[in-house]
Image 1 (cartoon, rainbow, N blue to C red):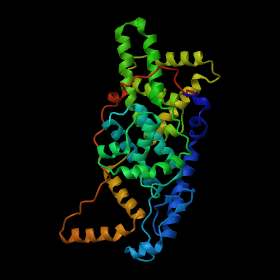
Image 2 (cartoon, rainbow, N blue to C red):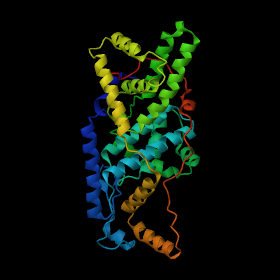
Image 3 (tube, rainbow, N blue to C red):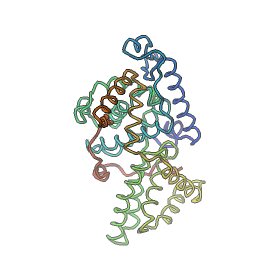
Image 4 (cartoon, rainbow, N blue to C red):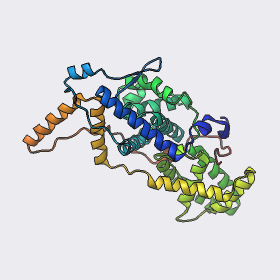
Length: 356
């Protein structure tokens, strides 16, 4: 794999926080305008790159009342529903025992895609599955669309139908540097450094790695992978995991790492970046199940306004029975397994990418 500093990941997909905010607001605003103009937000990207929106006459023929505009999702609601599906990517990958590299690549594809699109325009469930499928192909871990769909009881055709749309949304830039590989490199380096201190010291490093995996998983569901290089993310995860027990002298290791790299950057700069990573992680929106159910209902109506009258009928019927209707939740997937279980894939231990 090419060096991170010369990759499209480094040059095109590491962005400032304000740029991320502007992109999310722009796509949300475009979806709102489509809702007013066409009565629905779903859009299809044609082969020539043009966009096809629903026909108002067809919507009205389908039972949508003229002039009726569904309520759009707010930016914050979009953020929550995206994070929900990023968690589902991790769960699906765990259920299939995919290596963490595939999980990280799929999440980054999902994040990159929705930098330019709103979840109101493209169904996040379908995009999620397509990102996993493309990730498997890119990482040469062959799983057919049929196998993927069958494994989680979803129609494989939605994966194939959205493949080109996702590739276009990624500008066909598919190289991803995951923090898991950097974490492998750092811990391999640390194990070699403490070999002379005995088996207990080596075990401490191994335990630290397992805890850091959980920290990386949490960071992957935030804006962190779109703002910081993978090497910094891995170091921030190690530092956070080491904070409670301090079994490893990470400060000494990181200072030695910077000296070996021969970089002009300083330890203070690295610490500042790691502090910023922790701050972004802490500020990330918390996914609440009831909120996700409510947002998912709004999202379905934005994309298919015909569902609005059906929902109202169900609500009226439920009130007559003096019972609350059981709303359809977003798709359920197997619970996420221990991330360490997916980390046993054999890799070459190289110099961690993207420290600076």
